[in-house]
Image (cartoon, rainbow, N blue to C red; front, top):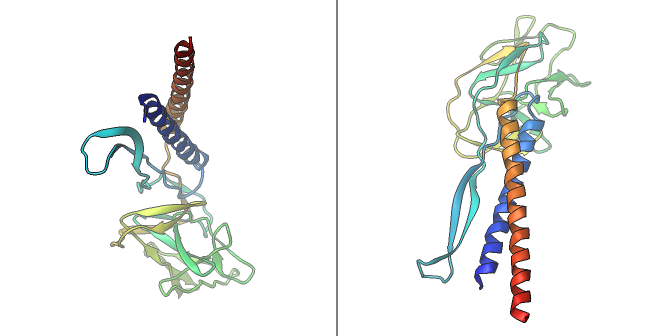
Length: 238
């Protein structure tokens, strides 16, 4: 394979990574006002592939993202005074039932559906420690303690299932799935509050501008390489 093709391959790969970076940062910014949303981080590395198996000589060196971890740092807490708005101050996620599956969320903007069950903004059921749906009486006051216990008229109705993991994978709409082993959760459930996204909008806008410039740079270099190749072909035919 010629050096020109190798250069084109490296630039195309870099452009693809820049496009991925642009999409990830754009998604972070789009969710800056989504309660409980966690920023996605891109860890970049250089991937090297030998030109022949068993040889140490390296032909291709191109950028890749080693991982796209979810940043689990605490978002700021804001008061809403809505008794069904819940914020987790500390570790863990609310357990939510979606169809036949259970997933995780930090978005505690809950309400009671027409059947009396506690649900999230997408009408998915919030689960208790027995993995059961939580049924409440909307006509009675609701008190939720810091440990997640839910009371109505002095009676314990249910206990929120708060789970914590070393890492999670995003699946969209501020939902996550476990990635790794569970661990102990040190938390307080705050009633009448919501956790804001942990995305820093100013820093993310700077990252977005840099990603756009990076993508433009790769595009410019690819066009220049193509132009140089054409001129080289013309000289070779002369």
